[in-house]
Length: 418
Image (cartoon, rainbow, N blue to C red):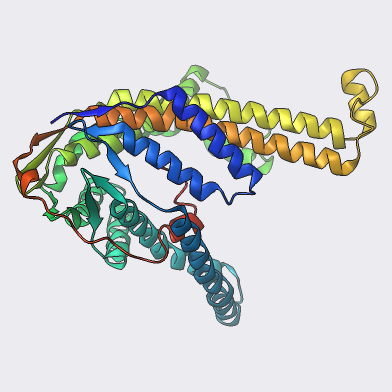
């Protein structure tokens, strides 16, 4: 059973533009309706076997869930942080211990929010009238994520595939389509195939650092160069010894691009490998997702969206200088009187606010059109169900009810994505 994607980029562009505009006009309250409309559009465009997915989430659920999460987090920030700072000053005579403890306390909530957001999305998704679902287990996911992250950090990232596999397996083994329970098969070391480009680039970067610092330094006084850099705050150096083979500096941006590519490649190729080992009773999946294709979508789409963002912010700063800047500066730049000098200060601030929000509106629209859209289309059309006999035995499951919806993900800024 193949999966089709029937949505058009132009339709998505105007939908995202109108929804984003309403979000600005309502001071952000329409964001929950915007996300609901976008999800319904994406879900209805994905059609396994010709039957569209359905998203039945309610924006009022998202709004109320956000308020519930904000109240809980406000209590945490206001009370718990106050206690932590008091203890920090009392016992350590410093604030950094309190800040560190506060950040550490938020990390479990971050993982908790990720799991709850996935549970809500699956609970509000249907196919052929049958609901998806995810069992309770957000706190179990949170402490497992903390343990796996600690192991990964202690092993300098060598066991990253192990963390990826076991965290996904925890969520996959608790996922249902109706009465059919999903199972994540395979072994964690199979993900090293996806990590091969990352390993190669990391080794090349380490070799480059050894080459540039110890084997053949860029100058004959590297320690003095570093010391002078910090002493002068990054200003150009002089008298630091003979500079040799400056062309090698240009290898650093190439290695950085390689790290970006390999990170994207690992993330999505790991999804493909694990998708090919996901099964249910009489149901099996197959993914032909292509890492280079996904990387190209990310690089080109992100470049388009962020180029507009940077140019737009520069333009807003230019208008700000023209409306609020010193008269002398404006006249020196444009060679004449300031054309905005007669505007009232309140009107100038309103104009700047509208321009600023418009820039981010278009950035969001372009990100949907050139990053999210092609990614979802590629992931859909490269996925197939190679065994479907078990679909005939699937029965409906009860609706998953929970009060805060995606509130914690929204409050912790994890719910902005589709």
